[in-house]
Length: 396
Image 1 (cartoon, rainbow, N blue to C red):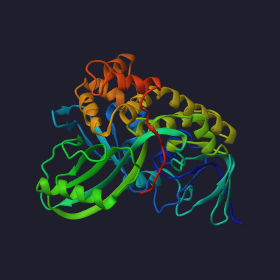
Image 2 (cartoon, one colour):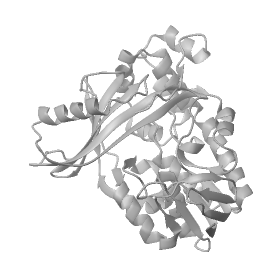
Image 3 (spheres, one colour):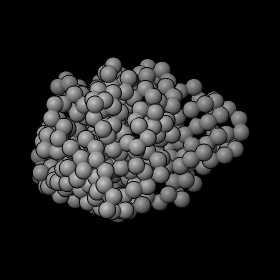
């Protein structure tokens, strides 16, 4: 049997695991690390984006090496209005993510193409029979089970293209909801990485987790054609199905997700309950962990469990909004909810995305003329009306 030894073993080399490794390498260089990743490279095949107001100076510095492009502002488009918002917006890519991690870590700290057979707080058994002994183990391998949650789904297909001619977009379109509304609330997302390179993502807030990739690819192609954008080459493609959590049993989720190791990322429920947004929570957790004292197995477990529970409690308002979106609202009404939200003050929108809404923000979001009938909304909030369904992943 092969054997390896390290201070911290990180299971999964995606966003959460990679940021933990970067934070530990920067602030705890005395620790030996090992990232175990099942795929060929770190970060998989993803584009992650965030607003400048999502992160403080320390977090922004940690993310900087992974950023592919930054824009000073962005647009949103709805049937009744369009809006330009002057908030800086950045996008990270898996390629930059992998490069940054390999530059920051010793070569022997990264192990790819290796599955985990089982793990506990101080040991990891790999599929090839290697036993990793660690001072502590943290599992970041993605969300394992959603059966304890209620809500809906955010699902998408994203494609990055090189075009035959410039597209003419000066800034990102974070939401283009002027597209045909199908399968709940639908919008197109566009990132102009270069004058002739664009990333387009067809996204849905849907009651179903079923993702028909060829159908969404065809809709992206139609969006290109409608704008006269001719494709020279498809650079890459990604897809995903993410939970939009409206409620549930967090204690049950934690027990069912595996209590033998510390956890982070979506495996610990660390994402925005309404937007499924993960960058702010991933970088906050990574930095907090790097500055934490006890990083042995027991200390890591206690820290991650406490952090995750606190995050769940802090997300209660956003879960209520998710309940209104997937319980109080019918699918055809979701567009009006998001359209109304984007008429509000830019600072409110910024705090919403970062998960730091003030009490006044929360009041403003719910006040005024609501997009859905008040009796139905109150029924959902009180538990006596239409409720979101239990989540069940149907596959891609």
